[in-house]
Image 1 (tube, rainbow, N blue to C red):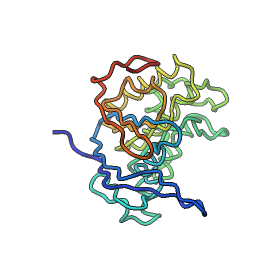
Image 2 (image 1 turned 60 degrees about the vertical axis):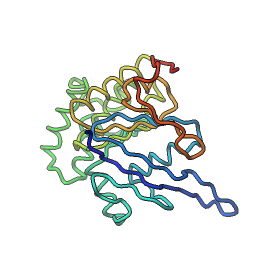
Image 3 (image 1 turned 90 degrees about the vertical axis):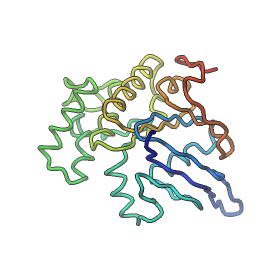
Image 4 (image 1 turned 60 degrees about the horizontal axis):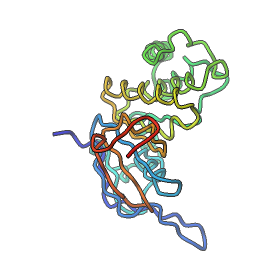
Length: 240
């Protein structure tokens, strides 16, 4: 039986906007397994980004619990949460979020150094992971010298550099053309399988669904449906 890595129990999230309150999540319950690829689908305002942030220890629920590898995030202080994120969670963003003044090697090495890794070792690890994402000959290039797809490969390498248990991918193909987007999700899927990483992708892009093990649809802050990929007719750019 697959090991449950993330447990979400009775999670509600209410945003207080002064005169009004917005309930972004409603009684969310979900188990996410170690090593699986889960896609979270939903339109803007559905609550998928809020759930994404709860899993990523970027925000706290109004009520309910999020537990990762047996650790209740509610029990951690802000400082402890920051340490937990750095050690266990990697992030991939739609806009790449690379540091423009630094080359690919230094961008990937940055989170390693922040987590206390000695610089020479961090650079060796960064060079190794850049090789794995197909950029071994681009390590000295800055972001403005790389294509969009190459920048996202650097972002994937940076997310995996610390060997996290979880990678959160927030619309990772949103700024890429169809062909490049397909290459990126296949790469992410292959690396997650090889390294045993749990990948959670928040998206509204159907081409992101093909490598998924399961797909969670969210509507009005609630779980609408949760299905295994093989139950769906998925091809790049479409789902039935």
